Length: 494
Image (cartoon, rainbow, N blue to C red):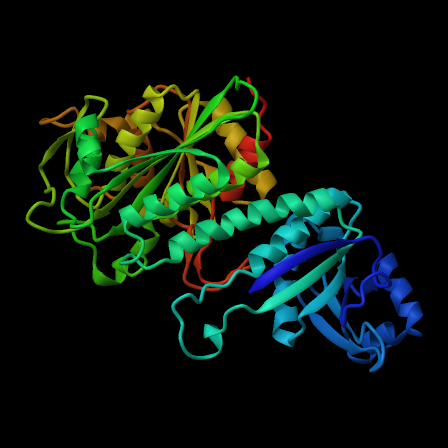
């Protein structure tokens, strides 16, 4: 769906749209709704009463207003009880609203901006606009038949009395999330490491970001033995992607973003079952989130310098693939004994984190679909947050809360490091046959490759969904983009 948002000063009179949307809070209208109801001689409230419409969240009722005037219809949209409303209610309302308008077949509508005493006009405008743009996302690029193959469906939605600046910011952030979704949803035969690098480069050139992409030879020459070890089994060679945003004034703080970029993961010789490979095109969701965030950062222009790093590769099986019991030498100089070739993401990230550290990052945020153990612990809606620095961890967690993305801090229990000790090398890439504490030991492994403040976000649960969800369709969710943008756009340059 191609959704266009517009701000309007007045609710109805300014916009001759065929549909007007009225919020209903637990069976009651807002002031705007009451005025509209009076204008149409209580037609809205009568219909509500006749059909026992209570205004439960997401409940809708289409009311005809007249054949020869605009608007011809009113859509009553349930928001639930006003006492329990949160800004997330408004975000979800925006998503559900555009989906319902599209289902009804309208191409243009005007809605009031759903306000509450609990938050201001700017917050409500931003959440409603962001929700609408996220909820209007569709992925049908490779469909050729059926209703779902339709492209170019357009909807114009006017937000009455909304904050124009808040709507504009929401458009930037939501577009970045949808960019990340597109990357995750691409099939792996299309989005190879080289193609991911090409799209990152094209984005950088479009938005004025600095970009460097290393090929296979440069990766080997740099000494990224852990990253290259994972990549060496594929016919599609790896790429190391580097993007930099520099503020106009000298920055007092440099933040590095690192994203896991496995464009497909078979598990290598520690082969995944076939059903577990079905969603492995999403194993680059961390990279997608980082690239999406950089897209928004380039337009919002915060005061911090931001550097993004993606080690893009495939984990495949061949005569050149790495094996269990191999020893890899990382960029840091540490040697790593491979106990499981399906614990490959942490190997690529070890070199990317080391490089970010060496290039002078003051703090690092890394995102990866790293462990099934984190999904077992927190489910499919919540990301695990691990940090070696309490203050930096709190900053990221608070940014996630403001952005409306769910994360939960988990411990970096140093006693578990004992399980990563190797008799052959400096460290093992997994703690062996035990299934306990897998998300924690993975985080501890990553923290061994930097002494800088590091936050590791394990997004294995919320990065991809096989069912439609509150803010969009099945597939990539773009999880992490909003958190990173909130973190960086509001961060003071220390």
